[in-house]
Amino acid sequence: MRKRLILGLAISAVFIYLAFRKIDFVQMWEALQQANYLWLFPAVGFMFISLWLRAVRWAYFMEPIKPGISRRQLFAAMMIGYYGNNVFPLRAGEVLRAYAIGKSAGVSRMASFATIFVERLIDVLALLLLIGFSVIFHDYPAWVQKGSVLIFIGTVVVTIFMIALMLRTQQTLRVMSRLTRPLPENAQQFVNKLLGSFLDGFSIFKKTDRFWAITWQSVVMWLLYAAVNYAVLQAFGLNESLPIGASFVILVIVNLSIMIPAAPGYVGTFHLAAQQAAMLFEVSGSTALSFALILHIANFIPITLVGFYYFYREQLSLKEAVAAEDKAQTPPMPRPSFRKKVGV
Image (tube, rainbow, N blue to C red; front, side, top):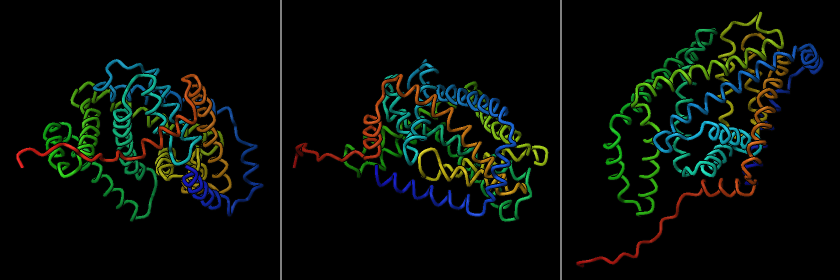
């Protein structure tokens, strides 16, 4: 844990240095003083509506595993997970989220991880589509435009593969069962159970009404995330000089950056990404960093406070969370088989 924390802090320190190295602090302070912070209220509102939609969407993924699970329980577990990402290093919140819903709703940690993985995979696909979408709003270099086409093609291929998994679930399980035969029995059971939970998460897409519900929720959710960026840009009076798609470009770049393991709260990675994204639209580096600082605060403080509330309401402890994290990251050790061979 300590090594991971040091690594995260080191990564964040590099990104903070890159963000601040050529900043005019007088200009940055002036931008912060002149900002209209009333725009943070709609920004935070958009954010929490999107988070509630995310919890509703998670309920659909949980349906094959725990039918009728409470959306409030899912929202609480999700906020605890975000709290974990803001407090623990290297995105430990995903483990904490699975631990929280397992404790409150009796869902196995493996099944919870599988649904979270499916959810994140859907988010990555949406993000890849947004990358292609954002090219419409900005005149990127030719290599970026060509790369966006390749990303779009890759997204289509992955989507087709996911559909094949949905339609051929039993065949997929049989193939994986054959592939895992050389492994020890413990490892076979672990891999097959994990894959089964993963496919259970995808099985919800077989229902047309659920498919369209998840689709529109995902679209609205990402639009609301972009609206958060738009509101904070408006606080600095930047929207008048920026194209409407700037919020989407910032959304894409920031979400790609926070995949980098760093210090708790995405410190440094978030700031440099938001700053550089705004600078793509000829915003000065100092003003762009002011925007990045406030955007981070608008995301960090409300989510951390709400997550903190749920964390202690559910009577979780830091010790339990860290133990659960370490356990989840340790693969199961195969046990030797002492079964007697017959007919030798």
